[in-house]
Image (cartoon, rainbow, N blue to C red; front, side, top):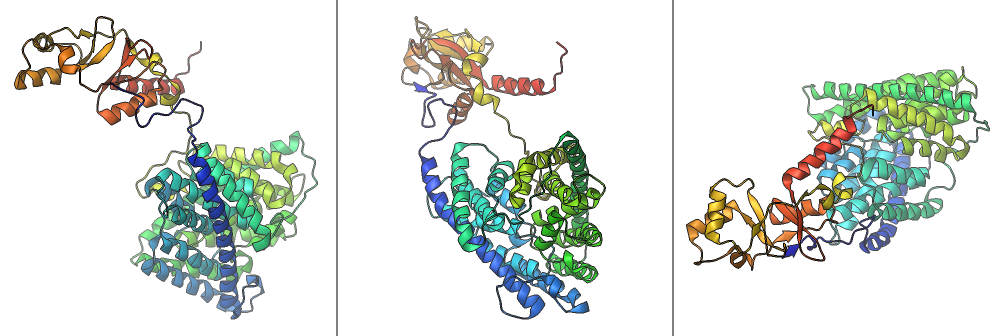
Length: 582
């Protein structure tokens, strides 16, 4: 007989990890290094594009767009950059459009974690042109896509499964984010909350290794320490945590509004009588006009984020960031150009908190931090990532309770008022639904002995084939029956279709069920097997009723049918919905 311990058998344990995890961890060292260097190249490309577009010089030194002297010529630069990006998307790869994270998610869930070399090259290049020419985006989305492409391409050099390719893709993405922002814990949490769609040692350990490798390279390539070192020096108490919850709720409303407006604008562009290649240039006009109003809204705006966290910005500039930055970012991103969402979300949430913070204890800088965590959490549906990201950016870990409160409140508001996040809505519009809730599959913790039908009806192996045919012809209750010997030990499984086949093809004279089934390969399970293993056995063999036998005696103890599996799912859903008082 063929037992449930087939080629897919694995000894039962808390986790499914094996020694291939160590192989993936070793590969993650290389991928993490690649992600760090990819981040360095992206930042240098952004600096080069900024210098070329705004100052007409070949240099990779950092340059502030606010220092330009172009006057009304500011309007033209974003249009030129966006036009170039549109051409690259049209004749290079359409996958470079947008902010990168939805594309990475889609590749993970629906593309077997395969990204092409073309995307790995064109995504950072197009993003550098977009941001360098004044696009109101950050580098995080592009580097997640680029780092992911590095991991995916490396994985494709070897014979790996789609799940293993996913691990290295996400490891590269997290490594890139770590190199850009110096936020290793937040990068790991982003991988878990947004990209991996699982919580397994097989994926967690390699992601951590890649992030650590990137973090070690960061001081040599980019910088050391927090990106925006700020210590607020505020002693948190119950009152401030309560205010943080309110600030988070407000940030959640802001995040929901931004997401709704973004896709409304995207719909408007979709109805334009022009090829989508030209849409970024139209969005560039809005960016240019916004830059003419206030140059602070152009580019990634990291200096503006620093000013919000330090409390050094004026109210006028903060108000401009809240309104003008939101408008130009939504229009530009809705037009399909290339750029990230994280830095704009930080800026918009920070501006909201900064302005309201002038009327709250602690000051504008403190509540800018809470606003950043809340808006990022509400928009991306990644509350742990947002809370840790905010404090890692500043190095002020004493503010973690504040950012956790704001993130949790924003997350609660967002999931109640918005069906999807700013990331998954884009994928849903392509006809693909994503559930971002993790839970233990009941098939994995319920055992066959808990679900099986005990003491099933059986047929003796001594029963003749002719009598078995007559038994099914008289209207047997079930489509198949276990066949046992005198000691109740399983011989095989006989079905109505078997009886019909024997009638048509004929059977040896005086043949018994034991005779015709003696050479049959019969799948079976044991009472200790998890239901998931029985379900896999049904899929592998095509048998819809699996006998459950005692592994010591071979005696049949029960039977498990497909209908039983459906009942498990129904009971699980009932446990979610049923609210009994007792």
